[in-house]
Length: 134
Image 1 (cartoon, rainbow, N blue to C red):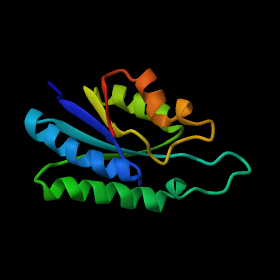
Image 2 (cartoon, helix red, strand yellow):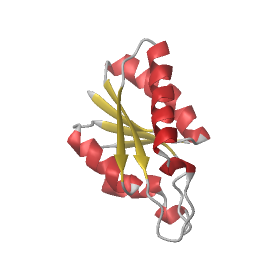
Image 3 (spheres, rainbow, N blue to C red):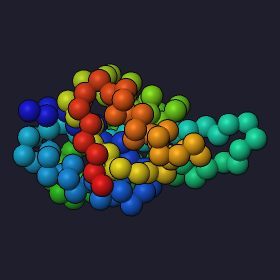
Image 4 (cartoon, one colour):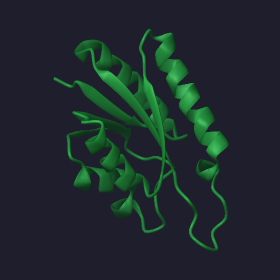
């Protein structure tokens, strides 16, 4: 049913919790797993965020990949730059994802509040179903 699962990862607790569900889904559906982390460049005048560091992104992706490798699963890792919600949806389309799995809140909440969260935007823009893990 889910041939390709896209799992956007960040450094949030919710993302780590969602990893267990992703592993279960991959086992059940024998899915291809694509991990994605998005480097969001700070707006002019903003301070650098830890998620904007290419080194921290590479480390995050390797850590996530290792987690699935320990469970006997292979994962492709992609790093992209841009606005997270738009990049997640573009990558979902690019890899022909059948499902996006993500935590309900991550480090991508904007100052405008939950209505403008990355998760909410992905739900509204996604080319495929989105499974939100609380």
